[in-house]
Structures are given as C-alpha cells and as structure tokens.
Length: 381
Image (cartoon, rainbow, N blue to C red; front, side, top):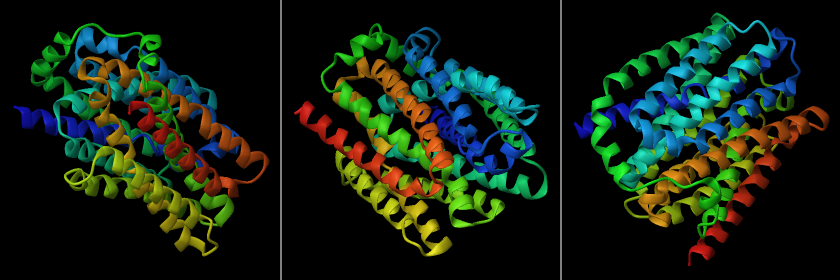
C-alpha cells in the first residue's frame, strides 16, 4: 500500500509541473490574441503567486484538519477548473480572475504534499518526486508548442486541464492510502502561526534562500521564450520548444540528484547546484546563437535541480518534524512571493530597457541564493 501511495504522489508531482510553464511558452502568441502588453504575463504570474501565498500560510491549519490527501485532491481539482477557464478566456481580465483559484489550489497542494513527502520518504525520493515535477514542467511547453503549431494556445490549456481532471479522480480514489501518515502528523501537535515560525532560529535565512531560488526558477521559465524571440531572433514555435530545455535540465538533474544523495548531503548539493546555475547564466551571455542559448538554459536547469528538493527535505532535519508543516507553509509563502515579485520586475526591465538583461538577471538571483544559504548554515551552527 505504501508503494501504491508513492506512485500516486509521483503522478501528483507530474501534475504539479504540467501547468507551470504554459503561460511562458504560450505568451508570445497569447498577448496578441488578448490585446495585452508583452510584459503583462508578469501580472497574471503575480496574481497566481499572491494567491498561493494566502493558501500556503493556511496550509498547516487545512492539512491538520482535513488531511494531506484531501487537501491535495481538492486543490488539484481547483487547478483543473482554472485551466479550463484559461482555455476559454475572452480577454486578459479573465486570466487575472482565474489566476486566483489557480493559485489557491497550487499553494495548498504544494505545501501539503511536500511536507508529507519530506517526513515519510527519503531524500532520494524527494529528488525523484521533483524530477517528476520536471517531467510535467518540460511536457507543458511541448504541449503548448504543438498546440501553437497545429491548433491554438487555448487547446494547449484545455489539454492540460483534461489531464488534471484524470489526476483528480486518481487522488480521490487514493484517499484511504493517506490515512496512516496523516494520523502520525496529527499526533505531532498543533500548528504555529507565521510570526511564531519566523522567530525560530534559522528560519529567516532559510526562507530567503527559498525566495531567491523560486525567483530564479520562475523568472528563468517564464521569460525564456520571450527572451529567445525578442533578443535572439528565434521563431515563436521554436522558442516555445526551447523554453522546455530549462525544465529538461531540471528533470535530468533531479533524476541524477536522487543517486547523488546517497553520497552527498543536501547542503553540498545545494552549493553545487548554485555553481552550475551561475555557469548556465554565463553561457547564456555568449553570442553563439541558438546553440549557446540552448546550452545555457539546460545548465541553469541542471543547477536549479537539487536546490528545491534538498531545501524541502532538510526542513524536518533543521527544525523537527513537529514544526516542519508550519515551516514549509511559510517557506512556500516566501517562495511564491519570490515568484510574485521578481518575474514582473524582470518584465518591467524587458519592456523598458531590454530583454537582453535576462542572463545577468539570472546570475544575480543565483548569487543572492548562495549568499543566504551560507547565512543559514552559519546560523544553524
């Protein structure tokens, strides 16, 4: 039964990744159809992220009351409904409205399922689970690229929404499998408020590291296609496919990371990932056309690969399993704040200065992430 639940959780992580890159991959075409500005994708991303912050901060209370399985199933259902709404959106305003339920669903499921996996499964499973997220995130731009070539961007959103419906059904059928782990979590005691979590030693540099990481990942994914079209002169359909190279790098990196966890600590893998991501941003600066752009995106993805799962998995080790759900809720809120605030900042720079700032912007975020991780280690010592 444990292995069957693990299989369901693996499918859940694929589902989590599928919608994440759709907006960035489709936006070079979507913004014209919706009479929007090129930088307005950041507005939709911000609304989604603010909504996820709200649900993340309440995830501890919801999970303790309803259980991780129920929260996950209902949240995926909410995202499925939102994706179908995106596919039928009559204008940009509709994307903004639908971004709210989408974000609420995404934030709740992210915090609930990550904490469940961090407590009940080993580090290698955490990496491979997030590898499954990468498979979904890499598949999303391919689905959108095919839709842009053969149908419309609306078909791309509808197809992913249909896949989410199938997963929702599987999650509701799997609810009995979650019960044992949920009972153990309830015995750990009551939750903590966000203010209480932030007073725990080491939490602030911990969540700031995660803030910078998610700012890096979301900015890299959201603006890759637009950067390739506007600064590198690559065609729109090709750029949508190239954007998936970043997620392919994450996926491959997390698959390999699962084996590396047998030899290296979470801390060592986070430092190694930061170095590779910085190298990828430097390669993106090289003026060698599509080849350097492709290599740079893959390297940035490889560098990002170990950071998210290793940060999540280390949460119970740093702060205890009794506090981990509360800490991960605040951690997710900080992550989505990074996603909410930083991609629109780059969108403004792209609109008013130049999209060519994409590589140095990624390099800056990587440096800040590494700096806060060093502060975390010093604080915990």
